[in-house]
Length: 101
Image (cartoon, rainbow, N blue to C red; front, top):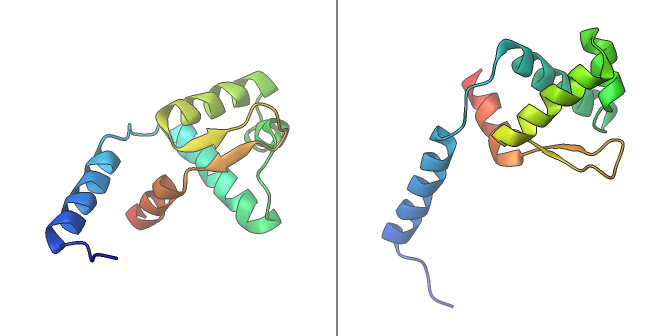
């Protein structure tokens, strides 16, 4: 098996960095929701349901769904419509969030 040249690895790193810069900024509400999702996953080892998000933020279920859908559209989370706990963090984005704080 051939070793990758240093130039190729540098190119891959540049692509990853460029991909991170394209991310849209989060609103204050979206930041609060993503922080709750992270806290919930760390504490209970499973993602929250939309109802749990709505209860925490004191919203209706539909408002929580709108925010989760906007986070999924921006690429911060991955949403599985078939599962009640179908919210997953996009792991490459999660690393960026942790580093920025």
